[in-house]
Length: 82
Image (cartoon, rainbow, N blue to C red; front, side):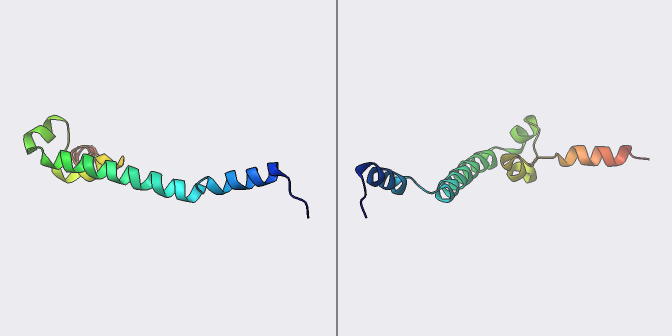
């Protein structure tokens, strides 16, 4: 079998690229670290500052992860339902 240098170069280049799965894992890990740092920072704030930005302490993790829905808004909405 004859293998030319182009095929060897392409194979070596493909081997050096991280697999998409590994790249995704790295991105998820970095996103998790960023969220953790943000949550830690928000948890360090006193309650009055969290209230000023519209958060309760219990809502910090949800807000950081992008799944934020205010407990206060839910309570208000449930009281307005007849």
